Length: 400
Image (cartoon, rainbow, N blue to C red; front, top):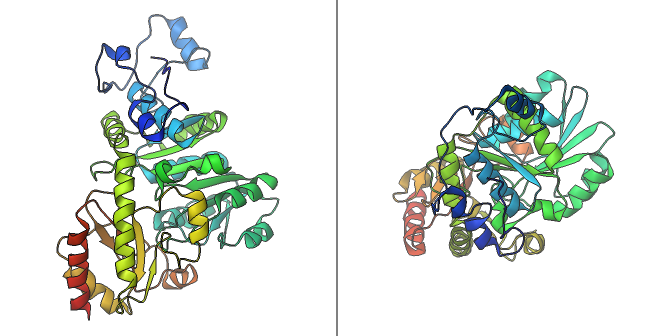
């Protein structure tokens, strides 16, 4: 199937999330796309195989490189992100590492935001540094600081927005323009927002990465990653970063689950965002909560930026209790809300970054990067808001 797509760029986001890249007539009338479980693909002749291996004739060869089910997912996500092409991976870290291995060489530099997902931070410092890549951090909420920090050796400018776990925002258009002016490639982790809320490539970014485990899948039943950008770059990521470096190939069954999740992404993000706004406002009213970080709150320092580059404000909240002990007591007292890493599921999930997702940071690094010992990260789910608030209220009472 060639993926001819009558919906691409012509219909609304929710319509494209359901239809883009597939027609039932492509698969004998099947409404749901088939799952191709084959690891390898055959050729009628040696000449046909040779043309495929040389790239002269596009064809599926081996599912570590491409597969019809993965191909549909990649084309649909590229469409939703406004990108030329996308590549799928077995995890979000598979996407991040494959992209960065493809872009960076010894002696070059990655300039990263000061606040990053813990495993991304660990990969930069415990992985890339070992191979001669220089890693520097700067507060990317400050465009002037970024402009001063970029050097001739800067190959990649990397950030998340909203950032995990502090909810700080980066001006995608401004920082991507600075990167382009310096000849660097901007890479944006769009996991928190998803293309339903923010499309970094349309704002000038070069590459978008996702942990599709989160909102894109949406049901906590898979692990996957995606990257999207210009076709030339994505081809390099596929044939070098994925095929030769990480081998982090996505399973077709997981691709099918993400395709299913995408069909409700717009609806889910609307509900996540609405409920999170109510929860954040409620937390803000509590005297026993020290601070609340949610871009939808009018007193969030980057609320104006959030309104410019986000269609809604998402389902993630960071809030701080007065001490580590209060945070532990609060979390242990929750009943419906689940203590777990990951995010973007139907269930409301909560975690303590200092002891969980960001434990790869030293205490000094956490302090430097704005992750306090009492910080709590809340992924607001799809339950009734009254039940979420009731559980939070009871646990805060126990925490005292």
